[in-house]
Length: 232
Image 1: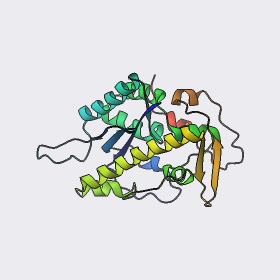
Image 2: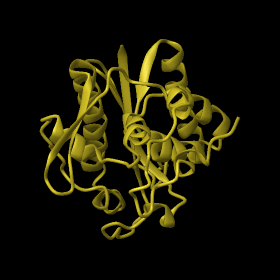
Image 3: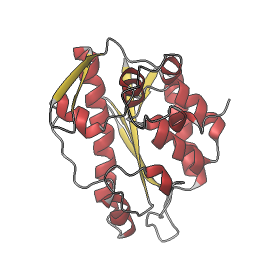
Image 4: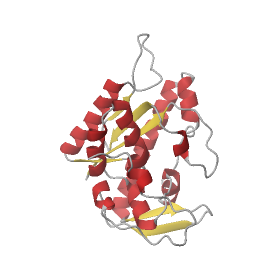
C-alpha cells in the first residue's frame, strides 16, 4: 500500500473549551496544508501575496491544485489518508476550492482511520491518543489552537513544520496499524486500549458498515456530522 497523508491548518482564531464542539465555529478557512508520501516527497501548500509573503488563506486556485493533486495521486494508486480528514480537512479544502464534487469523490475513496474507528467503536479518538497507544513519539511544536495565531503573527515556517508533522504522524500511525493489524489508543483515564483492525477500509466501505450499539452513550455523535457536506 503506497500511502500519502495530508493535513491542514486553519486561519480562524478561537478558544475551544474542553468538550466543546468545534463545529459551532465553522465554517473554517484553510491557511496552509501539507502532503507527505510515506518515505518520499512532501509538499507545503499555501498562497503568496504580491509582497512574496504567505496570505492569510489558501486561495481558490491553489486549493484546487491541492485537491487535483490528491485526486491524481488516488488515480495513480496511492492510498490517500488523513486523520479525521472526512469531517474536517477535506471538507474545508472543498470549501476553499469551491469544488465539493471533486472533494466528495476524493473523500469516498480516501482512508480515514479515525472515521473507521468511529464506525467500529461509536466514538471519535484523537491523533495524539492513538499515537500514544501505538508508542509513536509526539513531537508537536504547538497546539492546533495556537497554529492560527502563529500564522497570523507571521511565523509561517513554524506552522508549516507543525502541519507537516501531523501529516508525517498520520503516515506513521497508518504504517503501525497495517503492521500490527490493530489500533491502540490512550483513554481519557490514561488507560491503553486496543482493537483488532485487520485492514484499512475506504470511507465508502466504512459508510456501508453499521454503527455499533451506542445505547450506553448519553449523547452519541451522529454520523451525519462527518458526511453532511458530501455531494453525489
